[in-house]
Amino acid sequence: MSHVTSARLELKHLFHLMLPILMTQFAQAGFGLIDTIMAGHLSAADLAAIAVGVGLWMPVMLLFAGIMIATTPLVAEARGAKTPEKIPTIARQSLWVAAILGTIALLIMQALPWLLPVFGVPESLIPKASLFLHAIGFGMPAVMMYAALRSYSEALGHPRPVTVISLVALVALIPLNLIFMYGLGPIPALGSAGCGFATAILQWLMLISLALYISKAKAYQHVPIFTKWEKIDPAWAKRILFLGLPIGLAIFFEVSIFSTGALVLSPLGENAIAAHQIAISVTSVLFMIPLSLAIALTIRVGMYYGEKNWQAMRQVQKIGLMSATFFALCTMILIAIARPYIVAIYTTDLDVIPVAMYLLWFAMAYQLMDAWQVSAAGCLRGMQDTQAPMWITLLAYWVIAFPIGLYLARYTAWGVAGVWLGLIIGLSIACVFLIGRLYLNNKRLAQTVSVNL
Image (cartoon, rainbow, N blue to C red; front, side, top):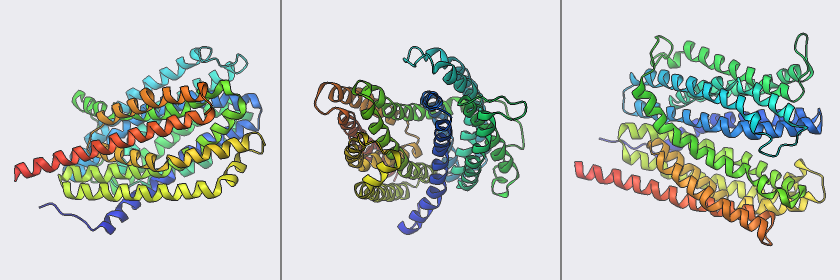
């Protein structure tokens, strides 16, 4: 007989998972921010080199780390299905896949500098940006294995260790950056490229810390990972990739549509790009809230999916979407009231301020759609449905939003706001299709239950 917990208890479970995940997300966003601020104190050229480097590293890192999110629904399902003996195998096989993908990502990062001239990066920036990419690439295997362990820990309902490690790492990045940027003892002063070395070393330290904690802490002893050695199992590797690759690609499609905005706007001049970057930066920070909720939803939905408790699973989805609506309304009110103060944090340029203020109205307009689409995608991941969301995001962002945004920005009076109108249309389409897909999946499961009765 399937049980359903009270809505209040379910909300408590959801927030208990979501809050540490949110802090982890903010800490990870903080790494790029610290690099940018510290490079900005060196010179404009160093800041530009970091911006180019991070702009290329981020999509590659998110694509590969996104694949490792597959560990979350697999572990959550095994928990729900009361088959904990499967969990160590899932975790070990995920680590194998992560090590292989991390090595591939490392090689991609070493090759990326050859593409800098193709992307039209000024010749003066190429040496600094290249060294940054080479350096940060060495952290890739650690990033992937850390992502696998993070998913395992969060899916077991232990998001806090990951949060603590992320926050400590955030503080540790500052002295590491200083050592590699300005040199110390035998380490030469590497300028902005030093940020790449510091970040790569930090990724390995984070991986070692989390692995040590998991091997020692009591909470993991019923599903230990490091007690025995296990060869890679092609069947498991295939299952992880089959589930994970669409997640990684869906994240990549979404991240890349936001990062190409600056390229689309490049003919409109630097004020337009600066205002666009401010608005994007504000929304990326706010997006951490529904994103963390979506990760928590994947875990809760995945557990009930493993239990085959469809009623409780639907209840979690409903509570999740209602919470997403509440958070989106809060961020909309925040943007509406605090626009002048938000823009003042970023710039004092009198030409940029009014454009950024204007763009924040568009940012406000898509908060609801964004919160709903990411929450629906989180629920679908928990139900191990990752292929459809990938195709939906590809269609919504690249087939529809990008051409519309490009056309409106360059060939109509909308100008810089054209890109944002394109984004609003793309997010709305993604939202409708993802919620529709979730509704159909629930309906199909309800029908199988009534047939079995």
